[in-house]
Length: 147
Image (cartoon, rainbow, N blue to C red; front, side, top):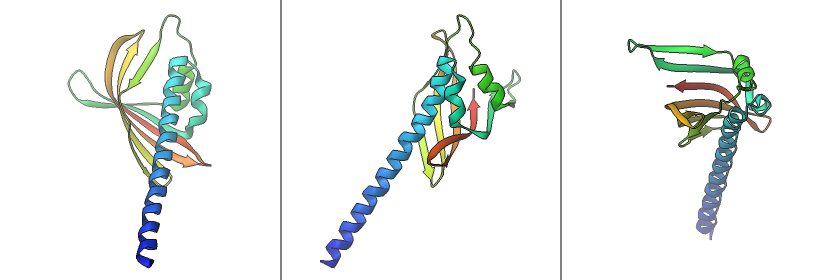
């Protein structure tokens, strides 16, 4: 009987841990989706609550000589640009997957993407997000984008 209870407890605990991981992944995916919904809608108010106050944004790309360059953008400037409507311009970053890793109150997410302007393909690459959980919600702490 003791063996049965021990095995039952282990199985039950593994189910609880697995459910918690899936719940966290769903919340993290929702946070990232909200970022891109805000970009598509030119709505900076969708982005502000999901971005940590110290969030960094970096773009990694090769210059014409093939050398890697890193460009940093102030998050406040990025959020302001999202809220600036551009007549006749629709931006749409489409993610093709989410590779989510969670450890306690920190998570990393790898998201390959294709970027479209007015439904025309512009470029593709990958985003690497770092998120932290504060007050039971996930906040984006950093975004690194490779073009």
